Length: 376
Image (cartoon, rainbow, N blue to C red; front, side):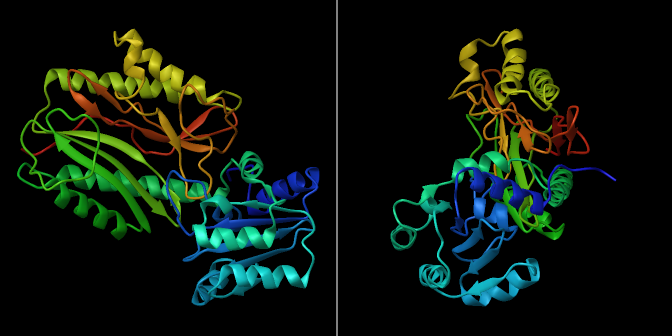
């Protein structure tokens, strides 16, 4: 049986230890109910529940917890998902929080997620917690970066769905099909495999400047389809990045895609606990520089980042970029993708998700990226 560093109990205990160190009596983690691949939602991260409406987890220094959910009818779903948590249901988060804090003095308070709440609601919540409440987002993110065993298992399932959806795309796509119709088919297919959400970026063309929204343009022979496939399983996202030629690829396209695969492999093979994120990104960049692409190609507009963490919840370790000095920890999960514009081919996508293990990395995908081919 695989050993993991963290479950939800340990995640809460880490936060409690940090609260004690900072002399915080009550932490209120707010959720705006927006659960996104690349945005932090620490309330969902702590409670293990993705509410339908604005919600809050109230965590006391003695370890007691209470989840406030809106709208009121979401309490039934919350009770099924988090049966061990005391629940308060209502249609007005601010009013419910104020009533709860009147029942027992909160002492010194800290918050997470307050700045992401809708403005009018945030004003009311700030009036309740007071302007002296400490913003605790960075502290909580720092001590809870590793995924739990449940989240890792769900990430594996999400990645498996992404891979199966990509295989379906290779069999289904053809010249004459509109990009948007292919995107709809892929989203529906991933949902049929069990994805509860699907964030897909897909476009096609003979020489693309980047991946964009799927249009009504028909695919043509000689196009390259580029796709970031990011389904979520039980709220945890997993991503793969793939490219496929419509018809047989040119020798140049095959050569340049193989270059990006080598760059990706160099970055992934750098992954282990104690390594800085900047070193992973630097390993990717080095392969491209060695291949003759000058330094400018390692910056926008030719690329954006060399990967990123995967929500929903925490997106640690953040963007895989040379500026990011975050130290990798065991059980962090992220995608390494040297997605890149090359002058000979246009923009190409190539990326794999990994988990940091005690001695290195685990690839969450069954098979690494290779240039696909669809019928012309």
